[in-house]
View: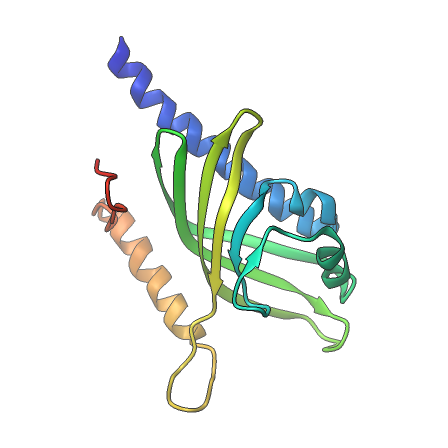
Length: 177
């Protein structure tokens, strides 16, 4: 009986973590800064696309100011996320597509990013303690985003899943399967 419980718990944890990310996506769509900030711990370390190199926590006023630079909703879609859950810690990595209309651009944009998110289970549920988002670019001096490479990588991942090849996994020091 204990074995069945142990197998169910990671599945429940993963579902709850996916729920945190889905709520964050909905909050972006609704341009609800408070809901975007809610799943982060106050001392979360964020490596985002915007300067500086690291943010500590998510500032509600800064998030609202950023949301105000967009016309209409901001759509986020997670793809190919894999999660590892060990006790009260979890991490996930995958791809994130962002679509919307920046007021300065005056036209819709859409681009893919890579994202790694680390969680800690607290009494109120899973909270984001670290997030790292990046856009790969060609290092040939052009600084062009490597969007085709992300799409190709997503295709490789999809084919691995169809062939039921287990995903490549790495575990932090001290965490083994």
